[in-house]
Image (tube, rainbow, N blue to C red; front, side, top):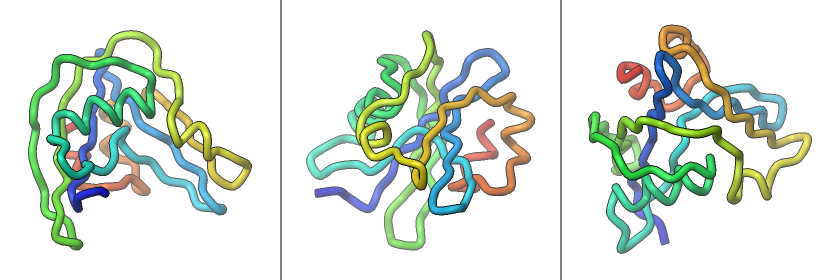
Length: 128
């Protein structure tokens, strides 16, 4: 089971942040690596698990940046992570990818990332 909370990782490499560029059923948008917090799991445990699943990157150092309420009663919890190594898409995102459901890991300059219009959740962009 999952809680209503979601964690988002702002992975930094110099002046860049790692984003997931999505193409799904004809729509194009961008998201942070991250996902739902499972029952009996802390936000920090969810962050480590989700980053590993989606990017194949191990993290051990991170800082809480902020929490924002969601419409469904949960929260978005954002963490800053200093990234090392090259990300490789993994987990359910890699397993469920097809021509109508594409995930691309991309390093984006933080100033450009702040201006992406189709970015979810919008609250995260203030942390770039």
